[in-house]
Length: 141
Image (tube, rainbow, N blue to C red; front, side, top):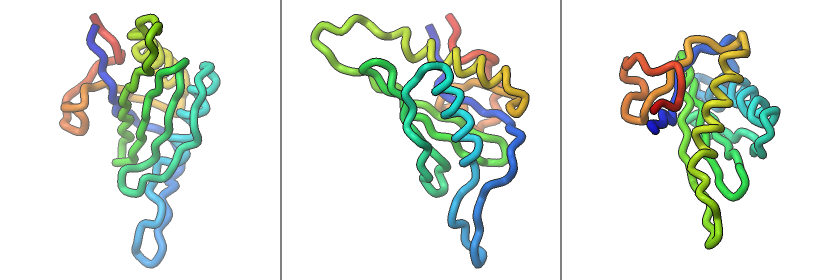
């Protein structure tokens, strides 16, 4: 199984970057990050509120049982979504390798079903912002 943990996409949201005296005090992407967080909550995941990470955009965590996924959304004209998976630890824990790809697949369906999101392309970390066309789905065999 191949997992593409990143996505590039377009989103129809107002520009929410805040600039004061020529300095950016809040980078854009807050509305998009909040919308993605709400999507994940509606899918049944425990999601922390998005936090501003300056030029990196907005990030939050998704908890799935004892596992967690870190997600960052950056506004670079198009949006870049980056994830990192952190499996939980337990002596008697069943193999939960399917939790991460399932979450990404469900998120992809939610993004594709929302008319505010378009041109969704899933990629490997090394392909982000490289012009590589990407894939329609985050998981492939």
